[in-house]
Image (tube, rainbow, N blue to C red):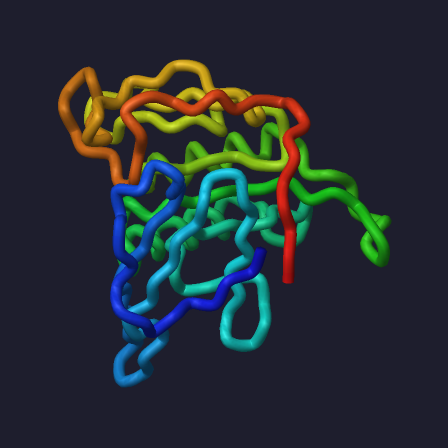
Length: 205
């Protein structure tokens, strides 16, 4: 199901238990450019929603996440990763999540090998050493790199193993149970029952 970002009055009944994601009245400006003007979005549990940018691309300014595809020999040097992550912390802030994902040879780039898992782990470490609070690895099986840790005390707060959730050390307000630091995001009081299983979804255009 693909839904447009509306300019209608704020969504009502925000406490509806059937609502998985709720966004109301989001504004985003880049200087004089108005990217988002009172965006509202509600996603019901059990549905799939595609967020499209103004040109139809599969991206949007509504979600603040940076993903970098690390291609061997192209953009995976320590210097490039160090400069990029320092820029992110300085210009965007330490709480913007950064995902380092593995390249897989396909179509017209069959001459380049897949990204080693060690490269992703190295990039994640560089990012965290430079002050990125939430750095992750992707497109590889890496529970450590896919999990969330408290930026204050270092405790594991959300353990992920592919689609399986493990340790959940957040209180009902999304704060670390160890030190009380608030983790950015919207969290339930307890983890959902997700995992590697097939579930029916409804798609409509």
